[in-house]
Length: 184
Image (cartoon, rainbow, N blue to C red; front, side, top):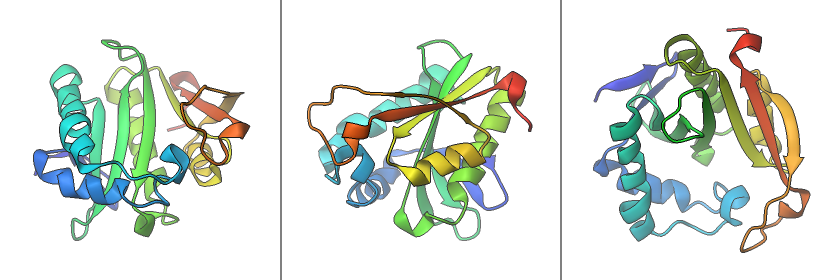
């Protein structure tokens, strides 16, 4: 296993086909998926046929920008993933930060630790100028991670989704962090 990035407690590494079961389990937890799908699980065939191929294709196109499996540094337990990928294909100036962690990892500072490490790496070695992050307005936990990671609230907006999920009537929020304002 080659680490993309190691922090005090995390290893962020590239996904492989061997991670299918990890992703199916993660996306199968209704609480993990509550603010994404209203709690509906992602079917295994979608993980195998769409998600993993998408993650792997990003490594081919962008190398060090994409989706990264998160594991505990001590013991190697799968915790979830982080996304750190360009918002515009082929450009590195602005990237989107995202994260999805198993419930067992919630409230332990892993999301903030991983987010800060990716931001640092982006601003100091990858040519990133701005990082954006999005969540549902009602997702207080994710908003706290963004704020603790140095991001500032930008706006609230509403999107048309095919199926409304609880809380979607309050919209989505955008947070951002500019390299010039970053206090690494």
